Length: 205
Image 1 (cartoon, rainbow, N blue to C red):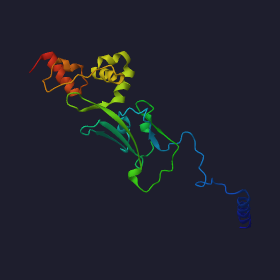
Image 2: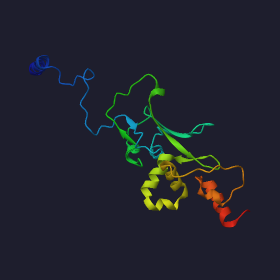
Image 3: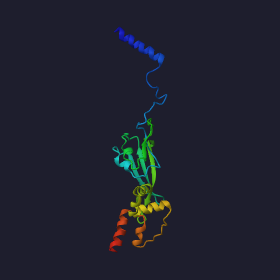
Image 4: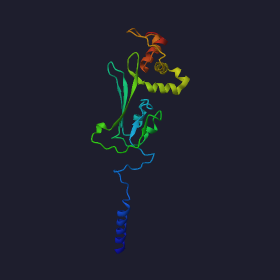
């Protein structure tokens, strides 16, 4: 038993002279590798509000809420509850633009109020000009327009949303008259687009 005791004594003296072997965290921040999966955050410019991140989240840590207030601009709110997040990286991997959400090196995430452990981004929604239902985020429609290029002109809603963003379209007022073929040149949800198309093809039923 003599030699093990001497070895322990040597290690104790060495630790006193040279200092501890371990890193002095939390007194000093620990060095982190670039690939660490820290706190995920949204990028307001890269995110288009499509909700793909919420679709692939295995623990449902991302909530998508469309807010349509009377008299206000409708918007979509994406809320990431990182107190439920398992940091699997599926949201980052399947991001439509590959720039909407990413991990940071912030890993000290403890707190006293779970309601504050959220990351949010809000995107303006494009409403249907007939029924006022939200169609989708404006940034999403513009991303589709840029992605499709000339093919985007086959979709009236996408094309008109892009013209709105460029200030190239003058919106005509509409009263309570019945549908007619002039309504084709409006930003419409799928249900209203179907109704206008059937009216244009077959006439009033």
